[in-house]
Length: 93
Length: 321
Image: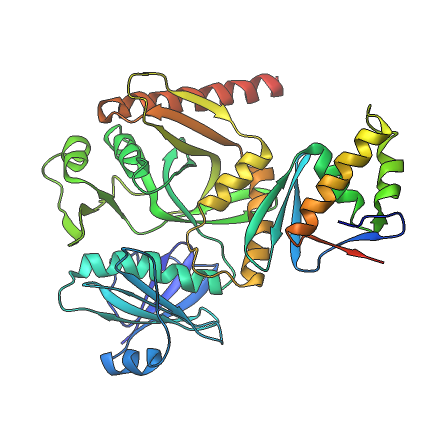
């Protein structure tokens, strides 16, 4: 998936989510499937409530977690790709 | 002729005599129950594809205006208007009145409740020290059997199968259902004695419908104190009964899994469902009870729950002091 620097991640209008303590759940309204997010995933999901690039996400999260930049970048790409595959976010130019 | 009844906090205006309280007023909403002819139902579903789960004797359909149709062989058929305010029904000749009313006031009414904006849960509820305690779990996990064990110990049942909740100022209130319990004959004999009146539920199960008299039923809304999700283990070698708190996410999933009506899946309902489950998960303690399913252990499960409730009360008391 092309998540190069200028492309923004936008949450889909066909989902609804809720916070559950430090975690979160997302419901895909198209297929009725629920997805769970652990505390770090829930933090990223909260950041995505406004459109951001993966680079912007990385710059915010690098100060919040003890993680290397390359590892964080890879983990972010994987999560965003999975969110997109499940139609929970869209990647726009 | 229309009689006025109350169940789940709802006022029912019914042309069918129902085994429900006629006193009091359901304050949450109003639903009309009317009979309709076989030709009405035949016309209503003509050309409409009926859904059916594999091996099920239950057929259903949805219409573009939100109306629903459901039918159980040997029991009856039901049409629920899109706004949920009207249920039309027809009892099949083979059905007993008791069996028909179980489906009318459970499955069929759940369509009307959901269409009216409620989110019923598949749960059985007993009243302990003036508070409701709910049991969640798949069919066959022992919700009603456990409730029958509580009955034997002198506690009362608030509802068996469908639980309607409302949140008022942060307090979750549970509403009473029909005064009956559904049990298999051995459990009925064991916990309620052989003198209990009963009627077979339908030809596909040995389950009995057992009416509950005034000493065994609870007729008024009560605060819901805790939800126990029953988790049945196949490991009958283990005798351990464990009660543990669920995280908000686990509680949310348990509440979602135990939604009463899974046939209505339009986006507005799904959105309401997620909002409702997340709100309840934040307001209510939801605890998992894991146990090996051995019927002789049911009193021990009851004891574990009562101990857990008293421990929670002690914790609250300690916090207050």
